[in-house]
Image (tube, rainbow over all chains, first blue to last red; front, side):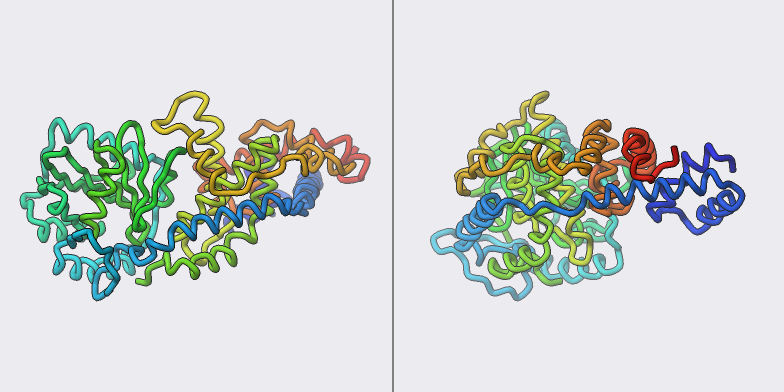
Length: 276
Length: 192
């Protein structure tokens, strides 16, 4: 190894402790015979230390901290009446209070229980490796626009039980929404792969009011777009590119993105009516 | 499979224990990114509130500071860079108004980022050198050297490949070394 490639490829990573064992051996071999690079290494460490010193932090001004805590209080206060609705994926035996006055439907119950059990297994053994560099909302809305024109299911059955089973087999959450209470019929389902090879499921519903697309995919932290966002029963509602989106988060590093063209408040109502 | 969101009081306590200790780190990063008291303030607040809303997605045992920095950088890019180029469906103004409505108004007169960043003699040299770096090098350097994140974590925060993190750190530090040369020579860090 010459000095140029040591400095370019090894120096910083060595100081940061990011070299593999083999790389470190190669680096040390070079350093042993090169006083210049040893000196350069010491300098690199000094520069890093100088920056590290900058980490001596300034306190967040009390006014700023105070306003943030107040905002958290405001969120808590708003969320309290919905607390009983939280945790919407916890179906089996979870005796939660229901809001009065709204007739609430359930996910097809036996499926949900089976799904929860199998899904727990998948979670334990499937590993959590979310590493997407895509915008899940773009995928969901793009597919929605496409499916409204032309939806071709690739699962033979349109029965929730069969669909759930197929999803689970592909290491996706086996939850299948039942939007019948809101007047939507399950048309069919697709299993596909995203560009990075991870599985994705599309369940498509049609009703008098329009269509709903339900997408499950492995993803961490989809950043909702800046703008108005509602939180109802643990679901996050917002507008994106002219669509209404409902984002929720089954356990296991997955997200559930529901897309509709309904106005956001109507969409919220439909989801609340149908939420498991 | 416990419900990670927990009850309201439970979530709040976990958030205060795990996330809020990183507030000062986020505050410093916000100041470095936007350099304007009002914007830094908004960015910090928006970041913390979003982190709170999505706290159920934080995986216990992983690096909470890295997770919150990811949100901060996402907010920074979405709210401050993109909005000038493309208008999202719902305007970010609405979001700001909502946030403001939920919180007390902050007095911006009490603090000044420039003073905080450059006021302290020789530390000002380091800040000036940092400020002179191209943004992408600066961000990588700050996350690795100041926040002490691993390359892997930085890759997640900035949403770039590890190899890119590595080369940005390497080139950023080399640039910094030159910028600091005079100062460093005087302090005996670099040979003349």
